[in-house]
Length: 206
Image (tube, rainbow, N blue to C red; front, side):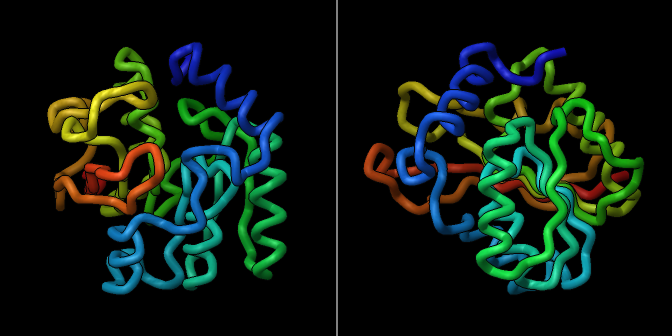
């Protein structure tokens, strides 16, 4: 099963292959404020094994590694992973980067204390959401966390990722996870989207 809509799968490849990172709208130099707060509050503790799904050029993976986590970043784009390795090298951070599909991650069961999803799920096709939830549950150990950030239904209309309702998030996940936190928050503004409303979801593996 293909996780992403055809145009998104195509666009990801074109963006990473043909553009500098500075020209890709979703690549920023900052992690989302709730992710930083989870690290500050030790919601994601030092030493935790983190699998960063759809890690792209590695901004979140390197951030987590620099704060003491043992991080494996997974992405389907070898070009994005090459850029991620460059970023990790620049900071001297130890991160393992693995090429793989988010619906069939080449990692063992129960390998993660935390599965991290930064703006991935909102690009997953609705008919692939159940498979994605099952795969995140396979990776997370019992009692481990899934941390998810993505577009909410309060985002302004337009092109780009799906705007998710709470039901879009909860229905596939609840068979595998308990809800610790699910809330909308205002994220850092961009030139194209000055008023960004995103979801933060924190879930515990059953």
